Image 1 (cartoon, rainbow, N blue to C red):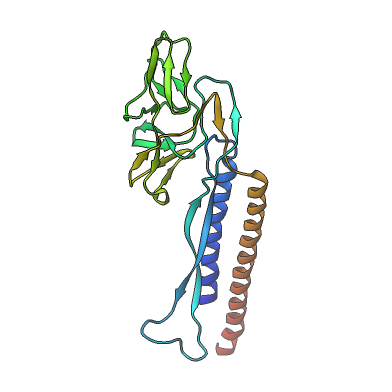
Image 2: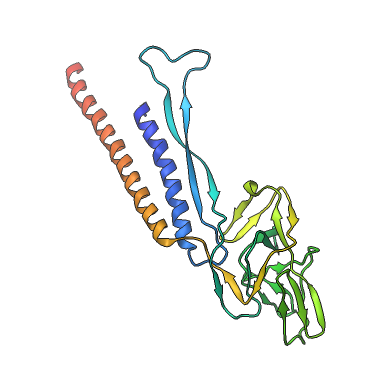
Length: 246
């Protein structure tokens, strides 16, 4: 592959990744607690080391998808009236115990399992401020959850929902649509602003994402056409040269 095609191919790879990220945003436009993601691009420069670029030469700039960043802007609140639905209006994340370990989430679609454990929509136990599963007595007929996460039933306090923030938000690792892994550890949030009977909606703006998807698609098609045209040009040159040397 010649240099022009190689540079164009690097753009195609990065553009395909950007389209995948945008498609994932659109797929989760209605997922509570989901935070939209976006690509960050940069240049990867290729040049000889230990010497200046020769006269008439140039530094080759390949396209590189440096990273994916997460938009942490608060999503709108949707009031459901469901006792176990919870939304965070401040910083932080709920903690749930998954088969892979403790994970963070802002998806507050919770409910009680048959044994009374408070769990998320996937059956993962919601953890309290001490990192233990929260259990609600079967006899509880009225459950109140305060803004700081304190749970109260018919007989009094039942515990406190744990809300934490990552020590290094930039190191958060996405697992699925709403779960996050915090490899650098977490710290408790003292005033999480929990709202009972509500959910935080996704912060994805579908119209904006659709516009970005169309632009990404056009860019991909343009570069693809360039690669095809360059391939045709090289093949035509070969076809013309071979008979002359045959």
